Image (cartoon, rainbow, N blue to C red; front, side, top):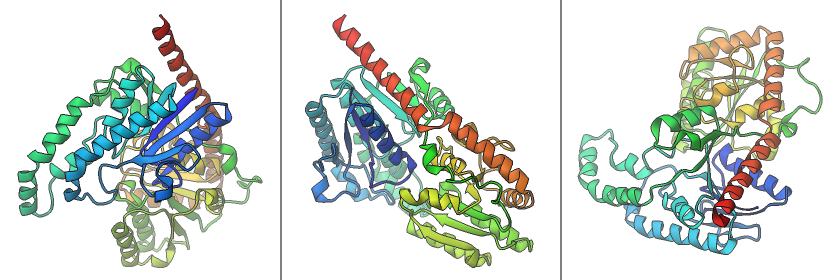
Amino acid sequence: MRILFVSAFYPPHVIGGWEQLVQDINISMQERGHETAILTSTHGAGADQLRGDGTGVRRVLHLESDLNHYRPQAFWGYRRRVRQNIEETRRAIADFQPDVVFVHIMWNLTRGIPWVAEQLCPGRVVYYVADHWPYLPTTHEQYWLGSTRNPVTTYMKRAVAPVPMHFVRQDQRAFSLQFRHVLCVSEAIRQALAANTPIARDNLHVVHNGIDTRAFAPQTPSVATRYQPPLRLLYAGSLVPHKGVITAVEALGVLQRDGDLHSEMLTIVGSGRSDYEAYLRQRAGELGIGDAVIFRGRVPRTEMPQLFHAHDVLIFPSMWEEPLARVTQEAMAAQLVVAGTLTGGTGELLIDGETGLAFPPGDAGALADCIRRLRSDAALCRRLALAGSERVKRYFDIERMIDELEAYLQQVCTISSERVTG
């Protein structure tokens, strides 16, 4: 097969695990003999990378808005960006002549991109959905129709909003997507799409994302000697409010307040909004735990297995409806105990009391109780860690995922070919 991947981001310029997954899929498909090409955004790319770097990656698409702060003045280039993205999509399809188009990440991209693919490759566009973009407001709608803390600013913004909203909604009508082939990263995403979109339920299928479990497994059995107090706690992810990292900081604050912080250390790995990171640091200081919270910044992916093996517990405090976070899979494969929330698809991996411990979103006290429970029961830690590791290896290994994706894409190509010849 000739597979054209469409993704808002592509390594090395990434935000989280989902962007890294598309690279894993791409490499795996190449190893199985398929020809691939990547159509992605200019995000993070230098001028020498934009038209291709010899690896089949075209970094030519324009994002709809700034990643951290919406800039209203940039909207006036909206129609130009849409036209350019449509033309780049046409050019990529004409040059590569794909058998199937695999739409991966659409956040912050115009729907005109997959719409063009549906027109030029009828019946051969497959969506792999790992968030709620098919029914969520666009970044433009969120800004122009949203409120601000200043009522005067809100009034002025809404007075201007009809102009940009006219163009946005005009394009939404023009770029109505068929969604004939939709793969969902979790059952939670499938149910959300079924409930909130007109996509036919028969078009929705679940293919759980996966990881290379061997890359994260400890080199030597370690469960017999790990999980001794003080526990080494880890948060790994984006530093943004909806990821709930503040809950992890507050939980250590609860332990400190109760005189029950037994030299536990929380390592925070990741990057995001600088103002939010500053807030986290400030809050840790206010709680008297500044020395117990270590900010490592972003860590290269190649160093993540070693980082996991240096810790006992992954704290996964997400507040939003997680599709299916790879970091929980990786941590379980590395035999960490996962203490996390069950939002979205996380509950398809994390089973409270079986493969980890669960606490309600935003509940620092409940997370503190989880830490206490794990600290006092090494046998429980070992049981949860081994069960989590086995579950990941059985249901969330990347080879299983690639097998399912490959079979589905081949089926789509076969059906499309039969319709043409018939």
